[in-house]
Image (tube, rainbow, N blue to C red):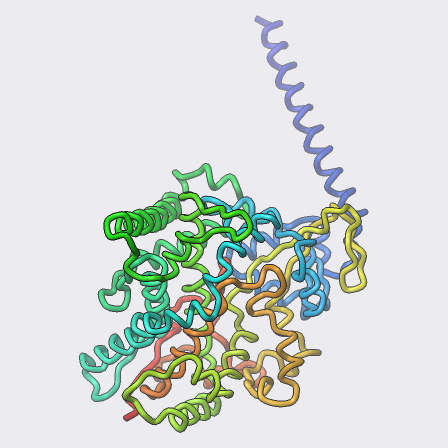
Length: 517
């Protein structure tokens, strides 16, 4: 009995000593690595030399862009985000990093893949080049313009029907309170539904939010698995997120199969839209077509490329217009002067040419509130030589470089009074120079593939809504010109899980509308 007990104690002691030794070794290695890291020359909080926890905490809370802006404001254009992460807010350096595939996307893109790597998520330069060849004409402006009637019908004209109905049902004469954030999201999803899935999701006409709710959960799922990969094996703990992923997959798969069945039966597609262009896409060099798993992933990417990014930009734009009444009044008057005839919708090309102030407003909105301002890491060059960034040499293996796009747009040495919304930045002699400091659609070989669709939606939506309606914040609005900090209207707090939108939109994104004629 006694020897057995002693043997048991010896075994436990041995296990305990082994674990203690392992912990000591790991902690010691971590401390030595932190103390002698080549990143120690990069300014930043002391804590960030030893751990990535503040960085990961901000990512999982959806507040990364605020964290990044705060650190860059305090420490400069190159800042230590974590033990093995630095962030850059210099536009020239960011464009250099994005110009080629030398700085590949970070490891989190591989961990957060939806089903298969897409043109957005892939870290493989060859796959990215292949996809861009296959989709070369898909997102071209000529292709998007050919679908402008569908974009108008299921976009802003459908939103106008919804808001006109709200006016008819309102107890107040010629006045209704609407939620512009949900309106823009519904509109964007309906556009992508008809263009990329063969049918509208009917968010605006029927109030069906199943797809929008599932997609937003999917974004949270992808953001979380990018940092904590083990979540992909924990369905029991994150069932709503897994259910959302499965729902989106089923909708996409069913849309593709339905379209293929229609073609088999009728010999041709019902229309040439984005869904059909994806199905028909071939690599011009190899003739390679896309198989079903990749078709599902790339079609699902349409949801991100054409919904959240655009609808959030529209939401931020309305917020800024309401916070700066003189900007709103000038833009509204410009639109109504240039387009007095209400019998036909304002189209993209005429809005772009005849409304320079609208262009300035949209650019300034994307500067102050970029729709993609989340964690965007890049690896150091694969040749093993490291890289010099903002005057600091970073050797290969030292960590990843994050693209501080939101911080780049808030640099006080580039943008005087950077938190103030001022479209005049894009109206004068400094316009070209200021545009070079903008990265709202990224840059280089990984520039946003859906930017042309976004521009068509942005111009047509803002022009037609501001011609038809007068906008006013409700008296109970929590944010507006009445709520300022250092003389500048406070922005609605944001939240970023891949895309960046207003936090608590149910409460914060209401506006009163009335017919302008």
